[in-house]
Amino acid sequence: MGYGDALMGAGLARGAKASGVRVAFGDGRRIIWDQHSPEIFKRNPNIAAPGDERAGDLRWVNYYKGNRIYNQQDASQQRWIWNLDWRPIPGEVFFSTLELQRAGQVGDDFVVIEPNVPWWKSVAPNKDWGKAKYQAVADRLKARGLRVVQFVNPKSNIRLRGVETRLSASFRDGLAMLKRAKLFIGPEGGMHHGAAAVGVPAVVLFGGFIPPSVTGYDDHANLTGGAEACGRYTPCDHCREAMAAIGVEEVVGAALARL
Ligand SMILES: [Zn+2]
Image (tube, rainbow, N blue to C red; front, side, top):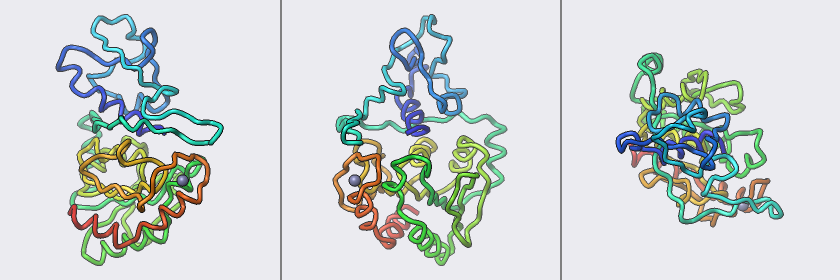
């Protein structure tokens, strides 16, 4: 993962400052951040940054790239073994006034649909619900008079027809806009963690890769197609069938129930 990991980290750190500490993610000697940490942890008073190792207010948490607690790699089977005791706490993102102002241009009262998955990752096919079905959901919601928006960036291979698009210059900018939405619909991944962090209801296409009990949030609709999660991060027939088992009506129904 990536952004999702950082957002779950922000969840772990919730409330730290109020109890007089800052969370140091690392091994007890060194604070270990990855390439997504600075963007997500920016302005977060609960989290200590690399370089703060000698500060007196640290609470060390052994959560960093290579040691994510919620999973363990089983390389011989090309899969993750999930820690079924893990529950994510919604993260937090501390936006600046300027970021919130800029995001305000998107307006209010809209639904965000994200049909893309990280296409460059081997797990992508297992998280992909399919362009045609996302398009059908967008069309149904529009037919009910709802405003449907897709955030796009250069990696957005799938662009839905007939929806509004907004350029998301960074993931963080996307979250600032998402904060104004009334619903998110999309795959299990960074944006669904983002929806939880900015307090937006969501319909999340999990399929068969990862159990909703491990990375899902209770107030989201987490759809699995009835599959038990396999954890395989290479293309998997079981995951394809799980996604195929999730129907357009099921997603539209879950969406309308949250609007
Ligand atoms: Zn599978």
